[in-house]
Image (tube, rainbow, N blue to C red):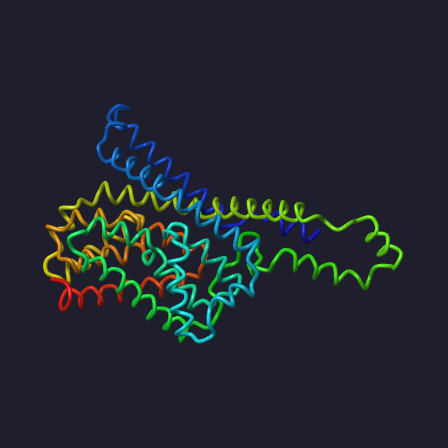
Length: 371
């Protein structure tokens, strides 16, 4: 009886969220009631919000799908020992190896978070996974090709982007290895922590545990009545498990994508490019402005180079590199996804390290490498 009462007790967090959403809807309806319907739907800022929201969703959804599919395939088909074998035990070699995994798995930052959660659950060390999270969206052939196309006459910008991303990933990976010693994954929905155990091994363990308690007669009867499954049946079961995992992961990450896309639309509507350009005086200020712009716009790493190219006459080359390096590593929608997977303290550490090293690196590039 006590268990039933406890299970039926409503969560305070859910009740507060419902109350807050209700108050927000009431306030919005009150404000909109003072305007005519035509004025509401023809408002220019509302049009910008709608356009940016839809464009971010359409741009990010394919990469979210790629990420959750990779996550599902890793969960079902890749054993833990394979992941551990890919990463050398030496921390520096492991970090370098994780940096180059991005060349093999060209995943955009939109789909990186679910894949990273699965790699950590499968046995990849946190420092190696963090390195892959930092450099994966940038150090891959698709992003290299798009950046080279956008800056065809300035190859130094292309190589600066790739080189700074690699160095930042190595440094952040070493810092995480040195100072972060505890598990930083949040529990998966349902209250259980995701350990990434293989389904077959878990099934075998359960069978071995129950075996001593079963009678010999029942044990022999079970083996006679349950013939071994065929290879096709096992493959079908694994594909079903992979599809189920991908669907759950997609809806888990999708809600954060929607929130991030809405925030990006609001910021685009109320923060103009001219106001940002007015703040960026000098190399230090312009680097910060472009880093902030990369964070807020949350562009996909495969297309952000063309947006950066449009700022060529406004900002210096170092600021353009800052925009293209920090944006894929740390942006608004990606940060929301990270908070669903990692503990808040680790997310804040990651954000501070990424912003700090990108700023220092682009300042050095502007002073000594880029014209």
